[in-house]
Structures are given as C-alpha cells and as structure tokens.
Image (cartoon, rainbow, N blue to C red; front, side, top):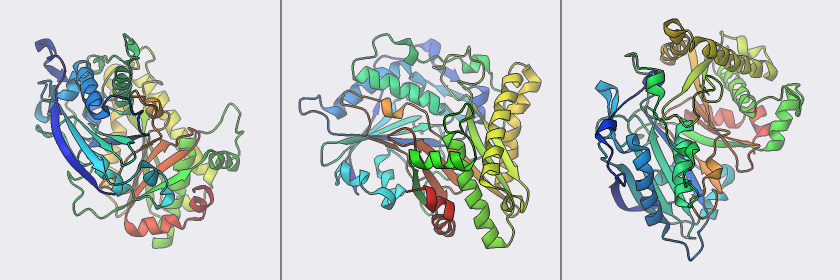
Length: 436
C-alpha cells in the first residue's frame, strides 16, 4: 500500500482560547507519562454519495472540538511542565491510498503492521519538544471511497481514556448528536486534584524516528472462542463471578511463551519483569468524573526469578498478572487518600520499571498495555461506526498492545520483538493453538 499526502495544515480552535486558560499545568500523573505519541487508526466504509465532503467536514468539526479541548491545540513546554495553549493548532493531513479498504481488511495474518504507519499523520516515537503538535490527525481515503482516521496524541497530555473522550466529542459533534451532552465535555481538574511534584521523566527508550530501528511487529488475533478455551484451561467458570479477564489471559499466554523462548535460547530463563498500565478512572476515587482530561493510570509490576517461569503453569502466569493488578488497584485506592506517603505507591513501579528496563543482561523486561473495553467502535462521525480499529508499528521491542476485535469478545495483540524472537513466537505451541 502506498499513501500519497496532498495536504498538510494546522487546524486551530474555532474560537480563541481565553487568556485565563492560556497555561495548562500537567498533573502528577502526567509527569509519569512517557514522552511518546499514542497511535490509533479508525477505519470506515464509504459514506453515502450525498454525504458532505468527509475531509472538509472532519476539519470543520475538529476545529470546533478543539475549542473545548484547547490544550490539544497548544504546545508542551517540557522545562516548565505545562502546555502553552496558544492555539497554534493540531496537525491535519490528507492522503490517498492506492488500495481498497477491503484489501487491507482481507490480509489476515499476512498483514504487516508497518504498512499501516502510512495512515498515521506523523512518526510514532519520542515527542514533546516545543515544536511538536500535541494532536496530529490524518484522513486517508481509499479507492473504494472508504477512509481511515489516523491519530497521534502526546501521551504526556492524555491517556487512552481521555483520548476516547475527545474522539466521542468530535464524533458526536460531526454526526449532530452532541448538543449539550456533558459526558463528553472535558474537565481539566487532574492537576488540581494531583499537583505535579517535579518527578524525573519515565524513560520509554524510544527514538523520535523509526529510521534504522530493526524490530518486527505482528498482529495475533484471538477470537471469542479462543478466549473461552483459555478460560477453561485456567479452570475458571466462563460465566461465573470470577470470570477471567480476556486481557490477562492473553497477556499470560504471551508471557509464558516469552519465558519458554528465553529458556530455549539460554538454557535457563532469566529473571522476567512485566509491567501493565492500569487505568484508575473507573476503579479509584469514583467521585472523579470520567471526563477528567489527562493521565490517570499507574503501573502494575509482575516478576519472576531466574528459571522460575519454567516450572509453573499457564494458570499460574494468569494468577500472577491478575493478583498484581488487583493489588495495585487496592493499594492506589488507599494511597491516594493518604497524601504525601501514598504517592510512593504510584511512583515506585515507575522507578522500578526504569531500573529493570536497562538491565537486559540479567532481566528480560516486557511492557503489556491494553486498549480493550474502550469506545473506538462507537465513534460514528456521521457515516457509520468503524469497521476496524488498529495501531501501527512502534520503534521498540518487547511491547504488546492489546485491542478489542470488531466483535468485542476477542483480542488483537500487536506484538513487537526482535526478528529472531518473532520467528520463535510464531512457532510457539500455545500461540499456534489459540491465535488465527
């Protein structure tokens, strides 16, 4: 697939941001967020022939949406830990692809994730320099009339919950259903509730460009039947009160595979350290509005000593991950009510993660993140809901991004490894048994 860009411009808010809102301080949780773009692509079938020009319509409604989400049109000042809401604008790119949407959807396991990066408005890598747009959008039309909306948003400003709230606002504004729905109007209150503390940045070890980065990415698809089979294999009732999370099941499956690969390569597996971001919006401080913008998440660490993963079962891997997330949520619920001392419960996993990330001679580090149970597939911009949602290829390794499949009961896992590791993973018996 080749994509030809034919327009690139900055879209400003439809009305100027007030001087009162000119400087937006990031919160304590934003300080811990990585300086990288979050890449998301939504795919749509061709709109009706009598529909408005979709590219112009999206630009117009984006401008109006930015009037509410004004920090997204500003620029981040790294040294001052704030956004200058100067209305400089979000990057808006238009492109044309030389394929039909059905050709991409029909690739199945032959899909190469890096081909999708042409549908993104910019490189996926380190950002947050003073000239980097906080929000970048690209609308690509296919030969069939279908289109894709690719987005890159600075993680320093928004987690996936906040990004989805923005998408819902923009989509409902585009399809005429927004009106005065306060559920999608942003509230910028996290810095008030959780003031910044001058913490060191979380190092994602990611370059600004993918040029010269040698890694492989592949999408593994686990349909609903495979998830049900995994639940049976760990011995829990599919419909019972302790129904295992599909995210934790898939994560456990990959973690076990990674440990086995390490054992084959080295005779004994190294210590293994895995972290999972845990969204806190719907779990901690329930009085905090779900449309509070910014980052509100923490990390749940899980670890195994050298050789320990070789003697435990799939159920054991699942239980370690499940218990880690449960403990993190419990601890954060208590800690965030305890003031000064409580903040260490949130920060310690970040510092521990940074320490383990760069000790690959003795520790294998893995980062698993879930974008499941978000509202991607509800984003109707006026011509129907998405037929698919994806990410692209990131310039990093030992990363797994999990996204809902179109049906909602399955998982698409976007795995990033070195070339040797990917070949081994594709031959793992458990992966071959459950993935299509």
